[in-house]
Length: 193
Image (cartoon, rainbow, N blue to C red; front, side, top):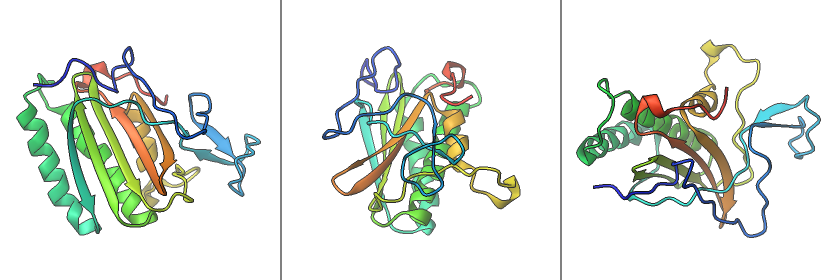
């Protein structure tokens, strides 16, 4: 049985402070091409810098070292989601969206970050809180801009569409990229439209 509250419940969400870092306004921002944070609106699209919501619920965690470990992690996540016994939509769409977001964020961390990569899912009644960390805090998550979809690199856009909130932050030498996903597909109001 899941607790009555979750970080992904918009009415109950609480964020924790990040040692003096102020979270910028909600929404995706643009940064200059040199990545200095002095956005002029003409640079690349940035994943929003936001603190992690206060997650309460059952915690599932995977430590990943290679891309080859992702299929087993996805399978394990599917099994855990199925065992929770949530009244999911008939097609299981919300659970598959969680697995897809998990795969996208974890594979990004493995490809562009530094190991160890730790993928954490907090299962709460208001939604799923997905947090993926790696040891490359200097490499911010940057959604692809003006790229042919056939070239890939659109995972952050996809996760933003699937989530009700998303962001990233740095804590203790690790970059954390997170997203909140609803437990049913019908509860989704995208964070990015």
